[in-house]
Image 1 (cartoon, helix red, strand yellow):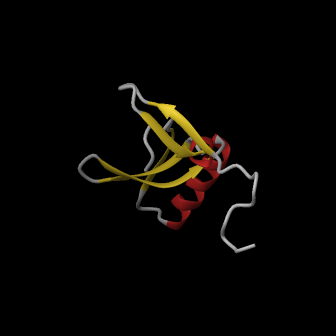
Image 2: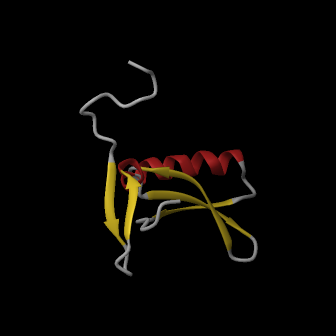
Image 3: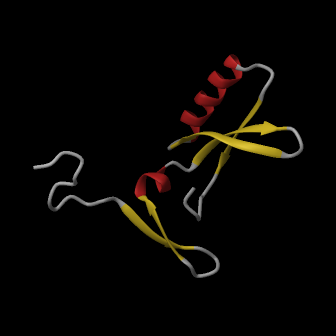
Length: 86
């Protein structure tokens, strides 16, 4: 058997979803599980997602570590139900 190929009968873990416009979106199941995002706030109302976690407490822990590593930066935790794959 060649490496990096799925085993026969093993699921790929894709989820079919639809957005508000009725478009069908295919995204990995893992992306649907990690709904808590740690966001870094930037100047001029910009933001960047720096981490995604499965639980709010994991996201808060990650946020606390980032605040210690970069005390001048602002980080927040949000629940982000992504409708489109990134």
